[in-house]
Image 1 (cartoon, rainbow, N blue to C red):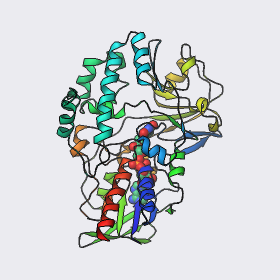
Image 2: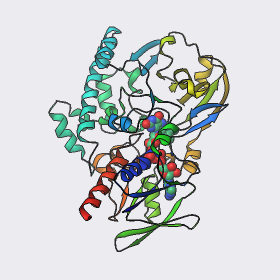
Image 3: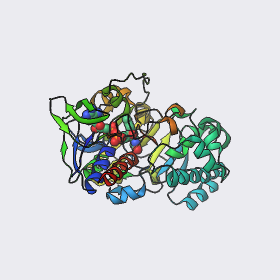
Image 4: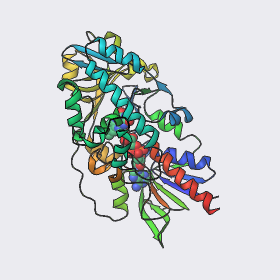
Length: 412
Ligand SMILES: Cc1cc2nc3c(=O)[nH]c(=O)nc-3n(C[C@H](O)[C@H](O)[C@H](O)COP(=O)(O)OP(=O)(O)OC[C@H]3O[C@@H](n4cnc5c(N)ncnc54)[C@H](O)[C@@H]3O)c2cc1C
């Protein structure tokens, strides 16, 4: 029975491990932290459950969500824009979503929605389940067929300026990706944004079922012989030999492990705050939409406890200006915690606290994002830092497992 060692128990490492186990390999997962899940983690705050770091699931292909039975708490509308007292809801059904946008006078947002969904379809049907990164020019060729090549040839900021009124542009892409090809907008745009029952830690719990996982097993050495990795060694001196190795942490962590020079990636500007409220929030005009993701001038916020009773409290999770949000909307906070980039870098083994392991910019997308193969024929990279890009996607773990399965078949 071929053996595989998966390094890192984020959702990608766990998917790789599950797929390899299902194919009959003898698999062990080595995780540096005390807990599994990486950035998909549920913790307790004032006796309520919060998704400590990542908090919504929307990009993982349906086939993987269904296969692993990840329990979603779907809300409809999934998202609302709140700007100067105006509320713009985004419903799950595409026709209804566009109809509502048009009825509110936002023909431009309806038209943009249609374009984004078409680009998204191309990405999901042809650019996800692959063995090697596909290039931006291949995407351009695909998009030319439907006259949407501007999403490959122009930047996110150029395309947003053409289609979206200024006050809404910030909701479509993070400032750090404004100069990236406009396809990044479609990458993030999903009608499937949902909560996960019990918080994002449930993703890891569900995926880890039946797997052998060693926690507090930080890999600090990779031993190679003749172009192949023969074993990895953990900080406490244990050695793990295998036929195949999957590294499912940040590519920067892998490059450092292999003794490579890595250019610094810069300081991230994000801020995540989790809170528990004394009483349900009452936000004028938003009463019907309190279970949706709320995008406003304060940032992105949601109240998972209102949609998911298993959270055990009225929770607020937010990336943005928490203090002003709470003050202006008169929310009564029982307790809160701020999760800082410094803490995530240190405690989640995530160099430079990069949300997506590597930036979502042209320098790190398509043919420029690391692929799954490495300089060693039996060592693979399977994390958000690998093609096609970050967030909770699961595709990287799945693709690497497929590559290994093929190798096993051809060598037997
Ligand atoms: C604040 C914040 C909010 C976010 N919100 C969302 C969101 O709402 N929705 C979304 O889709 N995405 C979100 N993201 C992004 C998303 O969380 C990540 O892109 C994704 O979870 C990465 O998954 P992964 O499995 O590839 O890696 P990770 O989850 O980073 O897991 C890697 C694992 O490898 C382990 N590891 C690393 N090095 C070693 C080693 N040497 N030995 C052993 N183990 C090692 C780590 O401890 C970790 O457990 C957010 C990210 C941040 C930081």
